[in-house]
Length: 208
Image: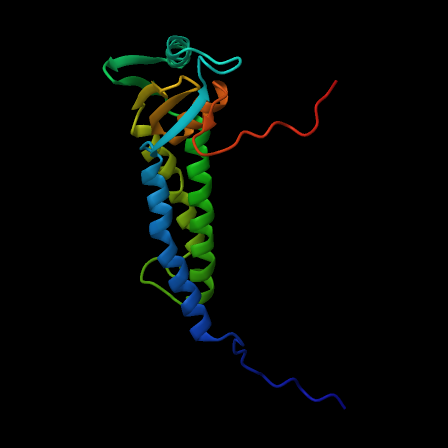
């Protein structure tokens, strides 16, 4: 004879302590997400020094020629001279990026979804007045506001400060630049400069 199935109550096998720890870690990580959103509206300023072959070196450039190339680069990237002197300040307008707005929205959605998953498991028996059991995944609907916050900040004005000098025997030119790190990266790659103290290594494989 088959005995009737006895009613058994299900009890979770997970540790409450581990889940609360996980929840605390998610909550603690949220300031980092907010910091990323805030930083997206500001330039990350760095200062670096690069060198190029000077007038006295083989295939080198005199200081005036190097200055002309820097000026042409800045003009091509919509930078204008704001202050002239020993250090020249170039000022340009950095337009808002649609891809950056979508990227921030995506990162925020992932963060909210992760938090919602923990909350959904942790408070699965929670019942609130009027709304009943909350659907924590509705938090993901807040993610577009990250992109909106970035977009409403508008275009950004960037300053690039450049100082150009040659050593005593004119064997190399020294270019010191301060500004947005992304723009500095494009700057030295376009002008084929070498960071001071570093050695430029040519490609090992050359196509004939």
